[in-house]
Length: 254
Ligand code: BT5
Image 1: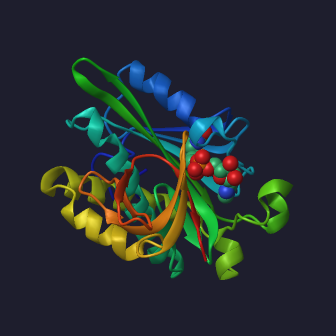
Image 2 (image 1 turned 180 degrees about the vertical axis):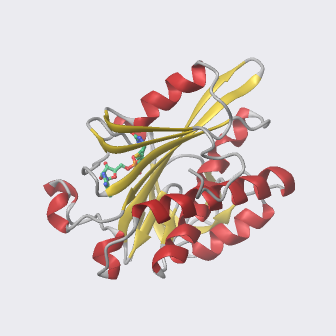
């Protein structure tokens, strides 16, 4: 803990050998009033989760499975932007520690060579007074080999070790992650979304590309033109119309 390079994030740190999901523990701590910046870290999850109750593969000792509790003074509508802020921070941390060049796929995937190495899940506790807590879950594949992943994701998942050929020091990676998350959430809160948006777009594999966006009720095909200041993806369909995409699964068309 003395090696931490942060002022807020990780000053309270809960480390657990094994748990169902760090998100569940973080929600509970948040309800009990834990401080802004509290971090929950585990070696393995038995019920790690993604969006829409999907499963998150969390091999023991191989990744970084953590949740960060933030208590920003912003309206609940801004919650999705924190996923994008966290994504920029994760890319920076991976670059710094490994030299790899990851890309962001909107909204919450970090890819290396087209394969997913990190997923981010932002959940919200709010009431009439606004945001009580944001729980930002980060699952980062560090030292897995292909066979450490469940068979159904072996084709689509990757780890830093698989991409770089080198074992990654997970402690160093956690320190870099917490440092960059603190830096970028500060920038976002003090200066707004503009700088984050520029960085996000420069790391993005989605912008400028033909994509298919699968949403709950419809699927749209078109060119991803950019993100708005609210983090909404702008998709231009063949009829020239511009659509705002708030939540979807994206597939690249080429
Ligand atoms: C995400 O969901 O990508 C968010 C994942 C967040 C995980 C962290 S770990 C710490 C914290 N505690 C939790 O319980 N969760 C958070 P989504 O976009 O819905 O993607 C889920 C999909 O990614 C799955 O359906 C699989 O196809 C794929 N997947 C599952 N595990 C993976 C892994 N380890 N690496 C790469 N892809 C994976």
